[in-house]
Length: 435
Image (tube, rainbow, N blue to C red; front, side, top):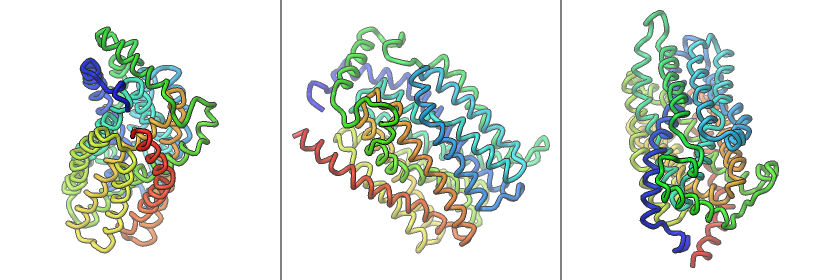
């Protein structure tokens, strides 16, 4: 980034005002989204036995979410670009809230799998839509930190959601409903409410922001326009060319490493910890612990990436550490060692998010970003289907939770190899250009 593109005092005030306006709402929305995505992990402590759901079927249900998510991801992001973020994000939130609440109506393995499929379709487009939306509002050199702050919602959702989910299971029998049914109903309501709030709170583009002073609105519009004129590796091309572009496909595989680790641990960690014989509430708090640490480190890591301008090692290093930590759960099976290693893996996975999405967005022009970011997220997140399916098969075949983590490790290894292959040459070119 040249000196001419550095943010002056007016720019700093503008970014600060935009951050205070948009980030708290988006973080709360994503927090609710992620709780609704993984709360089946806690529901499983009661639901699996009540409905006759085997580990293999639970893995299928956990994974099939990502099939529909992947199928509807790109169309959803293109619709957001066409209809505007305010209306489309609101539509997504209301839809997923209603479907998530309907999980309480699951009557057996088949209905559980079907509703999980519908939940993926309802939620599709939210995350890449927000990432695209942030490119409308924040200069490029701020995005790792901004995305990191936004994605703190993932570990915070575990920190807040885990003990709440454990407590809601205690409502078992209240008004004739099981605890796992109350869990789905009560945790779905905030998504619907926030969907309607979204219509009043979000603004589609800076030029429409009446809440920004004119000089800040003009500065931000000019700054983002100047960035758009800079050359990027993936230029504006037809959608089908974008989703076949080698950078897009490679980055999707890289993202799969962190995404499968996040989804796999989110769904299976409560059962893993409960297998040590601890109480349900203790399971909730021990599940929350790795997320507390991850939330504390995540923003700092994104800030370090922005300050140095380095994205490659800030993504690759933690990604590799997350896989190593899960492998070590096998030779160190005790509760204390397992919790420590899960803390390391969850934290390492979480901190990659900001630098990764900053790197991905820097490779795409704004016209290409809607399809490109959605495809990266769709393929990367869609790999969660295979990961959770393999985890379910592994658990059913071996009965071992440490071995159940091996499919996650496999995806992390693939992601690391692909990033080394495609990312290092790009990092070298950027370093040479900066000298």
